[in-house]
Length: 339
Ligand SMILES: [Zn+2]
Image (tube, rainbow, N blue to C red; front, side, top):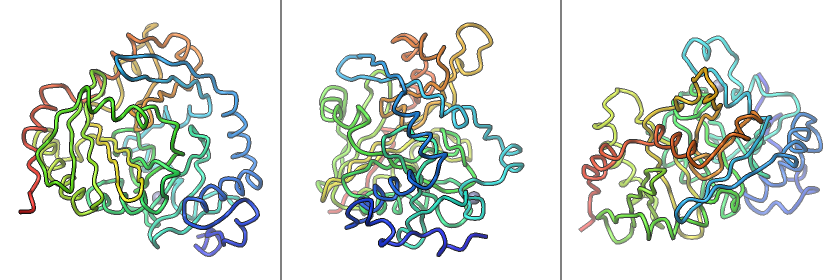
């Protein structure tokens, strides 16, 4: 096994690549360092410069479609139990490529360069231990990491059946701010499509149905308040989905001192019927947090070419939790008030 000391990169090795004053700036420097020393990564970032993007407008928001052939491995990943048990875990330290270095964060997580980037700066943040992808017990960690990385990055979580290509190994990802359309559109979306959910004044929660996606938006400067909301919402969603597994979700979070903004996208299913079609309606799109944030990734050019407003509507209506179930989750989400 590669020792953590061999993977953890010292500030002195990062300083030639930029100021290293906090974990966010260190992560940016890490990406530059890795780009210089890891040919696979620099090749994939070169490829990112030539991706094609088109933009679709909806009522008050937009969705970009990115043709990114480098993402074929992730989009078509087999995540069934048998396939997972037969492959080496690519997030475990012993299997990291020799060139890969990382930043040890809060003792339990490693900040790594994602070798198959979507964002101009794209990180993968695995737990040091090989434990299952599950948000219960890790939501507080997610908030801490979001705060540690500061205002440069948005953090995201893909549930084990909602786009995580390593459902057996707890991890988050992060991408630079300013890339996902929903970040800048959120105020308008909440005003236009949101309904306030009763909660303590130290917390603000809205349930939003923007016709494509159904989600909660929680904002607070208190991690404890966010945790209370998370537990209340999770319990309500768990009752409705009653599968015995984690209710299907993607989470997106960012931090602007001193406030977190956290979006919880509720899911109906993992992959849309388009993914499995055997006729010309086939589209290889496997939505996860980034797609819900407004950037849909198509690794095949023909899918990029044929994507339309109508097909985006169909795909999101299949993978977002249906309207009735969402209303029921909202109704049952009872946030304890601090009186
Ligand atoms: Zn692992």
